[in-house]
Length: 207
Figure (tube, rainbow, N blue to C red):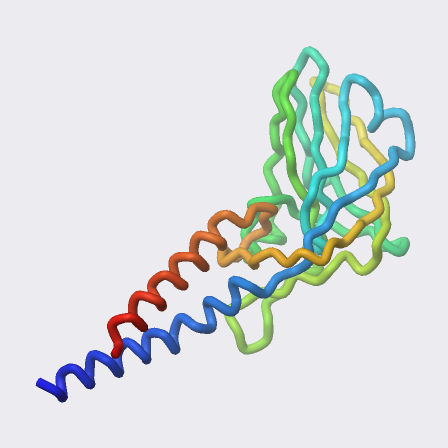
């Protein structure tokens, strides 16, 4: 009987040792970032299509696009990019899996009167970590740059251009366990909280 209890106790400790790295991973992260943007021309500040900054991460440029026109429009991600230190970066947007970062992206529709929140991540700054299943997302490389967001409305194509300034905050945000670009952290928080509760439960019954 005592041997059975010892085996169960050892199993609990082994499980705790297995989930501990995941709990640590859920607390390590890039810093939270906010953005100041100024349009380079009247397009991005017009009353019909408005681009405004959104809170995001230091490895992306996050924004909101409001469509105040009478018809829907498409965001052409393949022709939208960032310019940082005079280098043009092809970007992927929120929700793209890292392994598919080189795949052509579908356009996103923004209905008349609606708003979309999204981020641009330089695809070449995302790469697999050596001898690991994890991925690395490098910061943008500078606290300012230029954005180009291409939209298509009917037969007309237009590029919304502007500059942005990144303001970093000290607040830490949990990494996302899924291997894709994202600007939300609810699922990672749920994983971290769940693992913590399980570990506390096992510790309670291990004595």
